[in-house]
Length: 62
Image (cartoon, rainbow, N blue to C red; front, side, top):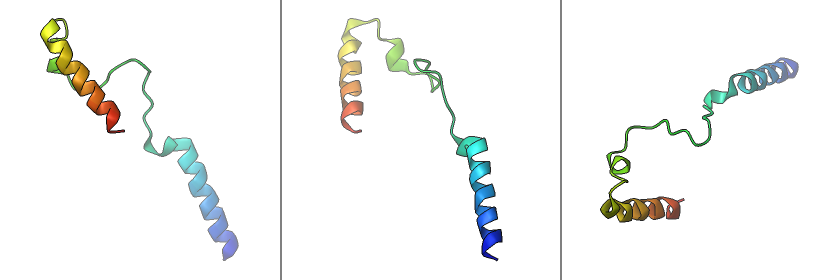
């Protein structure tokens, strides 16, 4: 009985390794998320402060 459990566990581990456990790998530097209206306004100097503040907050939360 223990042998069967061990074999089942090994098979489950093998399937998990092969399928990648549902992990999606993206190319670095390529944004795949939703469109960001604030980023579209980045060319305007008055919006750069808003972007910098949002970036700083996002980095501090991690």
